[in-house]
Image (tube, rainbow, N blue to C red; front, side, top):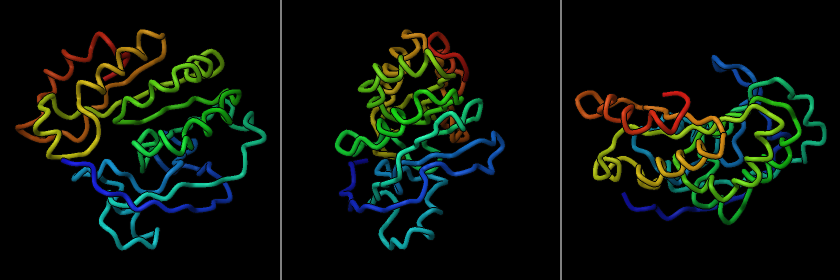
Length: 206
C-alpha cells in the first residue's frame, strides 16, 4: 500500500491528557488526530465522525497544540498510553515532533508509559526513551499481525515488518520493556506461532 497524500491541519486542545475508559484505565494520549498508516482494518476510523473531516480515513491528520504539562507528577503511578487512536510515530512526527515533545513533558512524571506504534521512528528518540526508562516504567509495543510483507503492504502504509522487528530488538537490547502485539489476527492468514518464534527473544511480552 502506497503512502496516501495527507491533508495536514492544526487543532488547539485544552489538554493533551484524556482520562481513559479502557480496561487499563489511566490516560489515553494522542498527539495527532487521524493516522497516515491508513490501515484497512483500523478500529480508530470511527474517530472521523468527531473531527469534521469528510476525507477518507488515512488521508488527513491534524497536529495537536496543547498547553505545556506543568505538573507531570500528578500522573505518577498512572498508566499513560500514547497512541490509542493514532500512531504517535507516524511519518509526519519526523517533521512536527509532537510525540517527542509530549514525552519530554512526561519524563519526570513517574507514570507507567506505554507507547503503541507500527514505526521504527521511535529509534530517533532513544536518548529520551533511555532517560525516561530510568525514572518511569516505560514500555514500547509494536503491532505485528503477519510476517508476509506483501500481505502487510496490502493492509497498511506503515513501515515493513522487518523494520518494526529490528526496532523492537534495538529498544529491547537497550533495556527497555518491549511488547509484540499480534493484532488483528486474520483467521487462516496470521501465523501466531511464527510471529512468536520470530519475536520471543527480543520482547518481554507477546
